[in-house]
Length: 259
Ligand code: ADP
Ligand code: MG
Image (cartoon, rainbow, N blue to C red; front, side, top):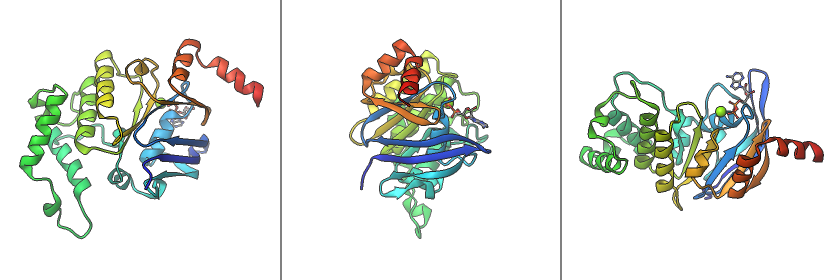
Protein backbone atom coordinates (compact mmCIF):
# COMPACT_ATOMS: atom_id res chain seq x y z
CA UNK A 1 0.00 0.00 0.00
CA UNK A 2 1.51 3.27 -1.10
CA UNK A 3 1.87 6.24 1.23
CA UNK A 4 2.10 8.56 -1.75
CA UNK A 5 -0.76 10.97 -2.28
CA UNK A 6 -1.54 10.80 -5.97
CA UNK A 7 -3.80 13.39 -7.58
CA UNK A 8 -4.95 12.68 -11.11
CA UNK A 9 -6.59 15.20 -13.40
CA UNK A 10 -8.55 16.75 -10.54
CA UNK A 11 -11.25 19.20 -11.49
CA UNK A 12 -13.38 21.18 -9.08
CA UNK A 13 -15.68 24.14 -9.15
CA UNK A 14 -17.34 26.62 -6.84
CA UNK A 15 -20.82 27.38 -8.09
CA UNK A 16 -20.37 27.16 -11.84
CA UNK A 17 -16.84 28.57 -11.84
CA UNK A 18 -14.17 25.97 -12.54
CA UNK A 19 -11.21 26.53 -10.21
CA UNK A 20 -9.17 23.34 -10.51
CA UNK A 21 -8.68 22.56 -14.17
CA UNK A 22 -6.94 19.21 -14.15
CA UNK A 23 -4.44 19.03 -11.29
CA UNK A 24 -1.81 16.28 -11.55
CA UNK A 25 0.43 15.90 -8.54
CA UNK A 26 2.24 13.16 -6.63
CA UNK A 27 3.27 13.85 -3.06
CA UNK A 28 5.77 11.22 -1.97
CA UNK A 29 5.14 9.60 1.39
CA UNK A 30 7.69 10.79 3.91
CA UNK A 31 8.73 13.87 1.93
CA UNK A 32 8.19 17.58 2.51
CA UNK A 33 6.49 18.95 -0.57
CA UNK A 34 5.53 22.60 -1.06
CA UNK A 35 2.93 24.07 -3.38
CA UNK A 36 3.49 27.69 -4.29
CA UNK A 37 1.66 29.98 -6.64
CA UNK A 38 0.20 33.44 -7.07
CA UNK A 39 -2.96 34.52 -5.29
CA UNK A 40 -6.14 33.05 -6.67
CA UNK A 41 -4.44 30.17 -8.46
CA UNK A 42 -6.48 27.54 -6.58
CA UNK A 43 -4.13 26.42 -3.81
CA UNK A 44 -6.65 26.70 -0.98
CA UNK A 45 -9.29 25.12 -3.19
CA UNK A 46 -7.00 22.11 -3.64
CA UNK A 47 -6.46 21.88 0.12
CA UNK A 48 -10.21 22.06 0.73
CA UNK A 49 -10.98 19.38 -1.84
CA UNK A 50 -8.37 17.05 -0.30
CA UNK A 51 -10.05 17.65 3.05
CA UNK A 52 -13.53 16.98 1.66
CA UNK A 53 -14.91 20.46 2.24
CA UNK A 54 -18.58 20.40 1.19
CA UNK A 55 -18.46 23.82 -0.51
CA UNK A 56 -16.55 22.52 -3.53
CA UNK A 57 -17.93 20.35 -6.27
CA UNK A 58 -15.48 17.82 -7.67
CA UNK A 59 -16.30 17.38 -11.34
CA UNK A 60 -13.52 15.00 -12.34
CA UNK A 61 -10.37 13.17 -11.38
CA UNK A 62 -9.14 11.06 -8.50
CA UNK A 63 -7.09 11.40 -5.33
CA UNK A 64 -5.41 8.15 -4.26
CA UNK A 65 -4.03 7.48 -0.82
CA UNK A 66 -3.18 4.11 0.68
CA UNK A 67 -5.07 2.17 -1.93
CA UNK A 68 -8.24 4.24 -1.88
CA UNK A 69 -9.69 7.04 -3.91
CA UNK A 70 -10.31 9.36 -0.99
CA UNK A 71 -12.87 11.37 -2.93
CA UNK A 72 -15.20 8.49 -2.11
CA UNK A 73 -14.58 8.85 1.63
CA UNK A 74 -16.05 11.15 4.26
CA UNK A 75 -13.64 13.62 5.86
CA UNK A 76 -13.40 11.57 9.08
CA UNK A 77 -12.58 8.44 7.06
CA UNK A 78 -9.82 10.35 5.29
CA UNK A 79 -8.47 11.27 8.69
CA UNK A 80 -8.58 7.63 9.85
CA UNK A 81 -6.55 6.65 6.79
CA UNK A 82 -3.74 8.77 8.20
CA UNK A 83 -4.31 12.09 6.47
CA UNK A 84 -4.12 15.13 8.68
CA UNK A 85 -6.12 18.04 7.39
CA UNK A 86 -5.68 20.83 9.86
CA UNK A 87 -8.39 23.18 8.69
CA UNK A 88 -10.95 20.40 8.58
CA UNK A 89 -11.64 21.01 12.25
CA UNK A 90 -14.12 23.58 13.51
CA UNK A 91 -12.71 27.03 14.07
CA UNK A 92 -14.47 27.54 17.35
CA UNK A 93 -16.36 25.06 19.50
CA UNK A 94 -17.81 26.68 22.57
CA UNK A 95 -17.68 24.63 25.76
CA UNK A 96 -15.07 22.11 24.58
CA UNK A 97 -11.63 22.27 26.12
CA UNK A 98 -8.42 21.64 24.23
CA UNK A 99 -7.90 18.40 26.19
CA UNK A 100 -11.42 17.12 25.46
CA UNK A 101 -11.07 17.95 21.81
CA UNK A 102 -7.75 16.13 21.49
CA UNK A 103 -9.06 13.10 23.35
CA UNK A 104 -12.14 12.95 21.10
CA UNK A 105 -9.92 13.16 18.00
CA UNK A 106 -7.66 10.34 19.23
CA UNK A 107 -10.62 8.18 20.19
CA UNK A 108 -12.27 8.72 16.83
CA UNK A 109 -9.13 7.27 15.26
CA UNK A 110 -9.07 4.32 17.62
CA UNK A 111 -12.75 3.47 17.17
CA UNK A 112 -13.49 0.22 15.37
CA UNK A 113 -16.69 -0.88 13.75
CA UNK A 114 -18.74 -3.22 15.91
CA UNK A 115 -16.74 -2.43 19.04
CA UNK A 116 -17.86 -0.49 22.06
CA UNK A 117 -16.08 2.92 21.94
CA UNK A 118 -15.32 2.48 25.65
CA UNK A 119 -13.25 -0.57 24.76
CA UNK A 120 -11.08 1.16 22.16
CA UNK A 121 -10.78 4.55 23.90
CA UNK A 122 -7.35 5.64 25.04
CA UNK A 123 -6.93 5.07 28.78
CA UNK A 124 -7.14 8.38 30.61
CA UNK A 125 -3.72 8.04 32.23
CA UNK A 126 -2.07 7.30 28.90
CA UNK A 127 -3.82 10.24 27.28
CA UNK A 128 -2.67 12.59 30.04
CA UNK A 129 0.88 11.34 29.68
CA UNK A 130 0.90 11.89 25.91
CA UNK A 131 -0.70 15.30 26.30
CA UNK A 132 1.87 16.34 28.90
CA UNK A 133 4.75 15.15 26.75
CA UNK A 134 3.40 16.84 23.64
CA UNK A 135 2.89 20.12 25.43
CA UNK A 136 6.33 20.00 26.98
CA UNK A 137 7.87 19.44 23.57
CA UNK A 138 6.04 22.49 22.23
CA UNK A 139 6.90 24.55 25.31
CA UNK A 140 3.23 25.06 26.11
CA UNK A 141 1.89 25.93 29.51
CA UNK A 142 -0.23 23.14 31.02
CA UNK A 143 -3.13 25.54 31.52
CA UNK A 144 -3.56 25.59 27.72
CA UNK A 145 -5.18 22.14 27.86
CA UNK A 146 -8.00 23.49 30.01
CA UNK A 147 -8.86 26.38 27.76
CA UNK A 148 -11.90 26.37 25.54
CA UNK A 149 -11.19 25.52 21.96
CA UNK A 150 -10.05 28.49 19.94
CA UNK A 151 -11.87 30.91 22.19
CA UNK A 152 -9.72 33.98 21.91
CA UNK A 153 -6.76 32.03 20.57
CA UNK A 154 -4.04 34.05 18.93
CA UNK A 155 -2.70 32.99 15.54
CA UNK A 156 0.30 31.47 17.31
CA UNK A 157 -1.90 29.52 19.74
CA UNK A 158 -4.03 28.11 16.93
CA UNK A 159 -0.88 26.95 15.19
CA UNK A 160 0.45 25.43 18.41
CA UNK A 161 -2.77 23.49 18.83
CA UNK A 162 -2.53 22.28 15.26
CA UNK A 163 1.01 21.03 15.80
CA UNK A 164 0.05 19.48 19.14
CA UNK A 165 -2.75 17.66 17.37
CA UNK A 166 -0.31 16.40 14.75
CA UNK A 167 2.12 15.30 17.44
CA UNK A 168 -0.56 13.26 19.19
CA UNK A 169 -2.45 11.86 16.20
CA UNK A 170 0.72 10.83 14.33
CA UNK A 171 -0.71 11.05 10.80
CA UNK A 172 1.19 9.56 7.87
CA UNK A 173 0.60 12.66 5.74
CA UNK A 174 -0.25 16.17 6.82
CA UNK A 175 -1.77 18.72 4.47
CA UNK A 176 -1.33 22.28 5.67
CA UNK A 177 -2.68 25.38 4.00
CA UNK A 178 -0.64 28.22 5.40
CA UNK A 179 -2.42 31.39 4.47
CA UNK A 180 -0.48 34.54 5.19
CA UNK A 181 -3.21 36.03 7.36
CA UNK A 182 -2.30 35.83 11.01
CA UNK A 183 1.03 34.16 10.41
CA UNK A 184 3.22 36.37 12.54
CA UNK A 185 6.84 35.45 13.17
CA UNK A 186 5.89 33.49 16.29
CA UNK A 187 3.31 31.39 14.45
CA UNK A 188 5.68 30.90 11.55
CA UNK A 189 8.39 29.58 13.84
CA UNK A 190 5.98 27.20 15.60
CA UNK A 191 4.73 25.74 12.35
CA UNK A 192 8.22 25.38 10.97
CA UNK A 193 9.71 23.79 14.07
CA UNK A 194 6.74 21.44 14.34
CA UNK A 195 6.94 20.37 10.72
CA UNK A 196 10.70 19.94 10.84
CA UNK A 197 10.43 17.84 13.98
CA UNK A 198 7.55 15.63 12.83
CA UNK A 199 8.34 15.17 9.15
CA UNK A 200 10.34 12.10 8.26
CA UNK A 201 9.93 8.61 6.85
CA UNK A 202 6.72 8.16 8.86
CA UNK A 203 5.11 11.46 8.04
CA UNK A 204 5.00 13.33 4.76
CA UNK A 205 3.91 16.96 4.62
CA UNK A 206 2.21 18.86 1.85
CA UNK A 207 2.63 22.48 2.76
CA UNK A 208 0.65 24.92 0.70
CA UNK A 209 2.20 28.26 1.15
CA UNK A 210 1.01 31.74 0.39
CA UNK A 211 4.01 33.03 2.14
CA UNK A 212 7.37 32.53 0.53
CA UNK A 213 9.14 33.28 3.76
CA UNK A 214 7.79 30.10 5.27
CA UNK A 215 10.22 28.24 3.04
CA UNK A 216 13.13 29.92 4.78
CA UNK A 217 12.15 27.86 7.80
CA UNK A 218 10.81 24.68 6.20
CA UNK A 219 13.03 23.04 3.62
CA UNK A 220 10.93 21.17 1.09
CA UNK A 221 12.49 18.43 -1.04
CA UNK A 222 9.93 19.04 -3.76
CA UNK A 223 8.26 22.22 -4.98
CA UNK A 224 5.26 22.44 -7.31
CA UNK A 225 3.89 25.65 -8.73
CA UNK A 226 0.19 26.14 -9.27
CA UNK A 227 -1.18 28.66 -11.70
CA UNK A 228 -4.72 29.09 -12.92
CA UNK A 229 -5.90 25.75 -11.53
CA UNK A 230 -3.03 23.56 -12.74
CA UNK A 231 0.42 22.48 -11.65
CA UNK A 232 2.63 24.19 -14.17
CA UNK A 233 6.15 23.55 -12.92
CA UNK A 234 7.89 21.11 -10.60
CA UNK A 235 11.34 21.13 -9.13
CA UNK A 236 13.41 21.02 -6.00
CA UNK A 237 14.25 23.66 -3.42
CA UNK A 238 16.01 25.76 -6.05
CA UNK A 239 12.65 26.45 -7.70
CA UNK A 240 11.36 28.09 -4.51
CA UNK A 241 14.46 30.29 -4.41
CA UNK A 242 14.09 31.23 -8.05
CA UNK A 243 10.46 32.24 -7.50
CA UNK A 244 11.32 34.21 -4.42
CA UNK A 245 13.91 36.11 -6.38
CA UNK A 246 12.09 36.62 -9.66
CA UNK A 247 8.38 36.36 -8.85
CA UNK A 248 5.92 34.58 -11.13
CA UNK A 249 5.82 36.75 -14.24
CA UNK A 250 8.79 35.11 -15.99
CA UNK A 251 7.16 31.73 -15.53
CA UNK A 252 3.87 33.05 -16.85
CA UNK A 253 5.66 34.41 -19.92
CA UNK A 254 7.59 31.22 -20.42
CA UNK A 255 4.38 29.19 -20.29
CA UNK A 256 2.63 31.53 -22.69
CA UNK A 257 5.57 31.20 -25.08
CA UNK A 258 5.49 27.42 -25.15
CA UNK A 259 1.69 27.10 -25.27
P1 ADP B 1 -5.30 30.62 -3.67
O1 ADP B 1 -5.42 29.86 -2.40
O2 ADP B 1 -4.26 30.07 -4.59
O3 ADP B 1 -5.09 32.08 -3.45
P2 ADP B 1 -8.11 30.00 -3.97
O4 ADP B 1 -8.22 28.53 -4.08
O5 ADP B 1 -8.40 30.61 -2.65
O6 ADP B 1 -6.66 30.46 -4.47
O7 ADP B 1 -9.03 30.68 -5.04
C1 ADP B 1 -9.02 30.32 -6.41
C2 ADP B 1 -10.11 31.04 -7.15
O8 ADP B 1 -11.38 30.65 -6.62
C3 ADP B 1 -10.06 32.55 -7.02
O9 ADP B 1 -10.38 33.09 -8.29
C4 ADP B 1 -11.14 32.87 -6.02
O10 ADP B 1 -11.71 34.13 -6.28
C5 ADP B 1 -12.14 31.78 -6.26
N1 ADP B 1 -12.87 31.44 -5.03
C6 ADP B 1 -12.33 30.95 -3.91
N2 ADP B 1 -13.26 30.72 -2.97
C7 ADP B 1 -14.44 31.10 -3.52
C8 ADP B 1 -15.80 31.12 -3.07
N3 ADP B 1 -16.14 30.69 -1.85
N4 ADP B 1 -16.74 31.55 -3.95
C9 ADP B 1 -16.40 31.96 -5.19
N5 ADP B 1 -15.14 31.97 -5.67
C10 ADP B 1 -14.18 31.55 -4.86
MG1 MG C 1 -5.45 30.41 -0.41
